[in-house]
Image 1 (cartoon, helix red, strand yellow):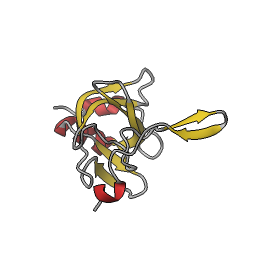
Image 2 (cartoon, rainbow, N blue to C red):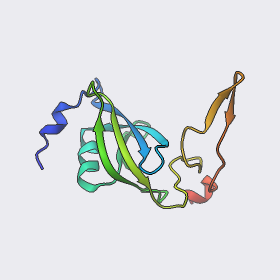
Image 3 (cartoon, rainbow, N blue to C red):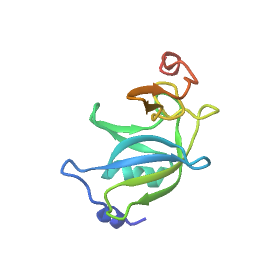
Image 4 (spheres, helix red, strand yellow):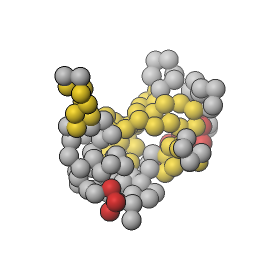
Length: 131
């Protein structure tokens, strides 16, 4: 596969693009992360999500430590070419766990009456995920 499609992405000044992972079946937004050119190319090649970890400054194959891999069904680019949307199936646990806190989605806090309220249960103790 030619990699010229990567040139259409508007990378930021650090060579990154924001990425949203959305669950294929439910439409739930699971997480937000970043990709560099290599991560996006590997994601397309492998059919599994590979991100760029800014905190570790390295490629991060989602699930490499937790076993909670993301099978990628579609890669979409927004109208400005500066945000990537992945349609994924979250693997490794039923229901899927995308968040390092052991929850289905990273977006488990909701603003209610001026207070952030947890709206989703922990599906698996994160200490047991990363043993």
